[in-house]
Length: 404
Ligand SMILES: Cc1ncc(COP(=O)(O)O)c(C=O)c1O
Image 1 (cartoon, protein in one colour):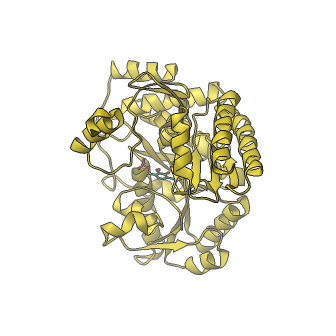
Image 2 (spheres, rainbow, N blue to C red; image 1 turned 30 degrees about the vertical axis):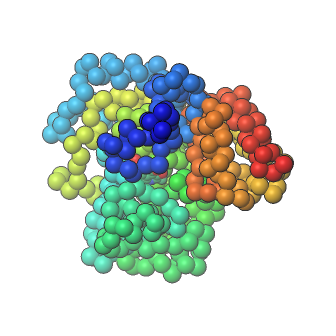
Image 3 (cartoon, rainbow, N blue to C red; image 1 turned 120 degrees about the horizontal axis):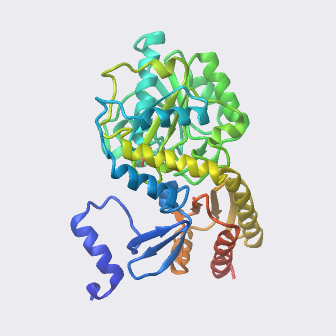
């Protein structure tokens, strides 16, 4: 009987009461510490997904926990009709780290990108009139689930059921310079790009392409928006992944690990983009409330004091070496290993990513299968070389079963 099986019981309880928007693993997680989480049977897992890049400084980092607890006992929420002391301090620190000048605070990556889209449209109309409202995005991108951001996401599988969609989004193939050149016109107010596409399986844009994008935006007088919701906060070894190319956006969005799991999304901007929104143009009830700001400030402290960006580079390059060795050892199964810092993927030439994800879970390791052929790794930046070696060893055994 299905109800005798604990995995089925977990699934049945959720499907009775929660909308079926997620294909969940049959595991109920109850506790976390550093790079590890535990389920309700006491089983330990090595977490190489980190809440989808959210727990960048690790689960329940003591400095973050204390900041949240202290702030919760002091002032959890105050509306944006009033000042709170933490919001401008957090904005100042994020601007210093990103080269931006002002911040807007929301609660998610989608909201951060909505803010970017609204700034770009208002800014474009002020520059060249109402027709200057088009935003160019790239195939395979992921910018969120609200109607505007799911339309910006150039993957119809996410947006088609929700048509009619907002107008004014133009899609270009990554790396297709001629198509990009054609697409940028006087109607273009912005180009929006993830420097490393996360949800489509860690697709890294080359520095030369990002530099060219900056040049084309400058020539066309269009804004360049970097969606660093997944790639930001030090994950790739620099605070922003776009810094690897030495390119600055006009707008940068952050979310995911910005407040270590307390919901927060941030839209940062510089120049005239930073002063485009006026009172009444935009807002968010919860955006920038003291609890989330306290958690974000503590998160930044940890990234700095524990030198987690250096660590992401060092540990990430060792892990990539291990994954590349697997690609060499199993050439008929593995197509490629790729990564930047601690944002990595193993692409298979066979549709077995979910088999590997399941096999790793059975061995107490959490990773993410992107479609049928890609395994994505987004561990907390506090993982060790030994943790990465554990994952590589487990993968070696599982790949050996696929390619005897
Ligand atoms: C690059 C990028 N942008 C935006 C989002 C949307 O973020 P959220 O789910 O917090 O709305 C995601 C989520 O995966 C993302 O990876």
